[in-house]
Length: 267
Image 1 (cartoon, helix red, strand yellow):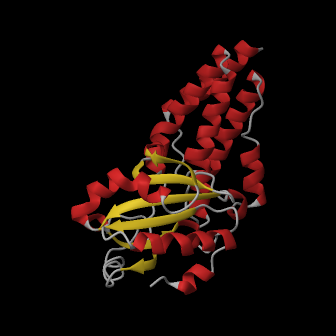
Image 2 (cartoon, rainbow, N blue to C red; image 1 turned 180 degrees about the vertical axis):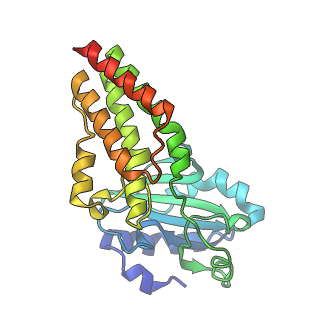
């Protein structure tokens, strides 16, 4: 039976979708349960949120469900488009847009053999014979955290790469590279310090301080070589405030010297 208490806490469009979707999935004997993750677990879901559904599959039927999953989601409602999630590193994911009203739904198809491989413990909406509830909490869920050592090893090479784009006049490339730093470095480190999920820049406006947001805004460049160099220097300054152990490495000094050379060339 559908967990109506959890469903009723959803925004209206999301609730209507779940109430239509889950009963249809129940009729597929290969599916053993459906759970809800993402923003719902953080009590952050609103009318603009995606809906993150985890569909648990009986292991012997997992391959057949993957082959058939496009047909499965098509039968649920007014599907406009769907595609797999390799671009976000999750091939089990099927990203769907339904409507009207337009609603973004992520279906992650998970074999019960892999139930312990998770970054969160989803809330069960429906299951057969407590198959999910009896196992989902046996292993702790750990959301990936940014590794300062991993970042430091890469950061100065990323800065140098971005500077070469400015020097060559590939300004759109430079702007994109600085944006990459916000997603891969600054956003995750700020969110981690705030105790929030370090997912790129997701909900950074909610968790970062006004000072942090202002510093982050200073890393946004216009389509101009000089402004890209300014934004890159602001990126370095922000990184210095966020990293725990300043390295003062030879690499850092050489890269900073290279930025000075680029600035001289621009002049």
